[in-house]
View 1: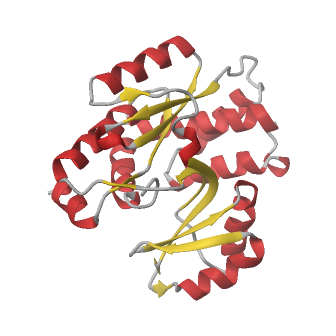
View 2: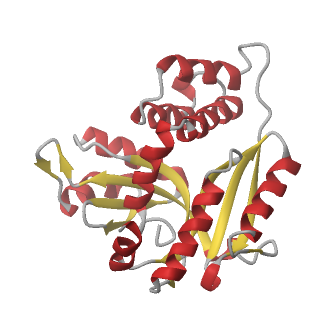
Length: 255
């Protein structure tokens, strides 16, 4: 993060824990169902569905679960799905901004659960537009520097992705983050694969245009708690924030 990337490592760790208890699997399955509903169940003509399926496979979601999700989303099981996307805008500790993306079949339940989580964990619901104006939708592809013993450099990433629409490459220690326009994320991901470079994740995310520094460990801990509580709600797919937490504070929180 730093809106996205600053705590990418922490988010990856949390994702591993989520996977063990089924939380991450459920969210990935929802993404597949929605992609199949919006663009049809045929992967050859639905790049959004291809991305959703690949992301699920990278997290070891069983193929039978993926196939079932494609059928449900595409209406091939005779039932189909009826989710809607809702964005909630929140102010957290120290005035940090959060966008809470929900994918739900019950708008009232989602609203109540998000509001309860926010008010009980030091946050306040924000007026529509007051938070979303601080974020921009971007394609974000994360590439590990160490790939099966081979080291990937920034020049390698730039050479592979510039013509595919990459706008910026950020160095985050153990990985590179490539940003692009949302519509170019598939091309960037594909260009990396064509160059023999594997990627950790490829998503369309909300990236903060300006970060809010949170250098106090106590305040940073409260931000993380709010994000974690929201992230654990069944209807919440993603939480984005403009909190910029220094590495030493992250280490203190982990400790």
